[in-house]
Length: 495
Ligand code: BES
Ligand code: MN
Ligand code: ZN
Figure (cartoon, rainbow, N blue to C red):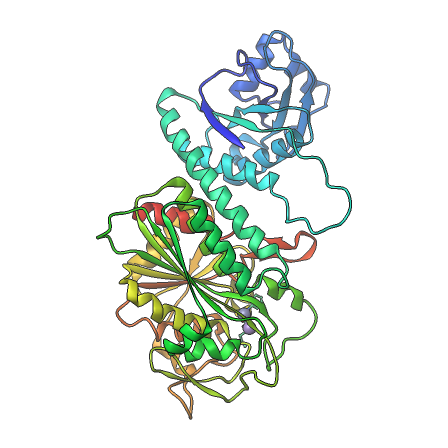
């Protein structure tokens, strides 16, 4: 999709489709009003007849608008003017694009981004427009046999701004929004692919592809023998039951000065989590193909940042493996030694994410990161605590936590700051090793975060538990692309 910002008026712009907003109760936006005036009252007549209510997310195509050079117009409902906000805005973009993608229009101009959206400036209005257009056009990697649906004709979308000073911010918003959209699409693709396709080896090949596509990206893949040499006993203990070789994928983005310390993004890359010997129940186990959502969000964030060309350095560290049962698999009660030297009693082989992340966090130290953020579908307990709407945010640094929280608010990809504390960490005490890998039923998302915390001495570190936000279940089952918008917003603020 090609995007451009424009200050044109709906009444005089040549386009295949002028998309104008209409609030409830016949309350026209200025663009809708302009079309109405030029066409001798056509829009008001349509509304008066009762053909369009203005309810959020509804659309009404108008085949011709006499007196204007637009080939057609599309009315989009924005709901009540008093309640119009970013949610309604995104829904309106999605509804418009949904109709446009099934129409014959090759291009369109959206005029309602110039409306007043509380707490959203021209930059974010344009960025959200680009993100929402791309999200509406996203299709799951198609592994269905049979005829493919036709591709949408729409290839060019204009975003109208109110005044001249907003053109610059809107253009930047479109560039960043396109980057984020491409990153989210990559994250979603990787998440949606089945585990028999998306193996650790496949993830490694997609990382190499990133390096081929972007000059500033370099990739290194560490194999099982390298992990042994590095003494990553915790990571290796998880991979023992699988026939798929593990990979430690290291993706470096160099957009900043050579002297500038990188930000480290550590992503959980369990391409299938059966639970191992502590086997999960069968119902819904297929969803554990999404257990590499953290890894996928690191791919997506780097794809986005590389497209945007932001001036900072990033290192992505992705431990990728399967968690499977077998005669060779790690057993409950086994004690393993992490790369840091700490010993861990594996009381539950299904608490595997923390076991691979602790070694990846230790490994990330060699890059002298100014901050380490790990992203993981870590606990079912986080889904119970926060559901599908907010990502769990944990940190050993108040400032970093606040920055990530603020990035999530700006990007409309929210996180909720949760505690870590010694009282909770005590739940991880073991009679036989330095620590156990589970901390009992209470505060499961917090004890998981506390486990990782024990490996972050001297690091500025945050942990994002995306178990609830990385994918949807039910009829809309699939990967969401979160928390790429949050990560990219935060990374841009670091550049
Ligand atoms: N990948 C799961 C977490 C998960 C569960 C994500 C449900 C999304 C939905 C993780 O590896 C896991 O199995 N965690 C266990 C930890 C427990 C054994 C302490 C869990 O949450 O049940
Ligand atoms: Mn598990
Ligand atoms: Zn898992």
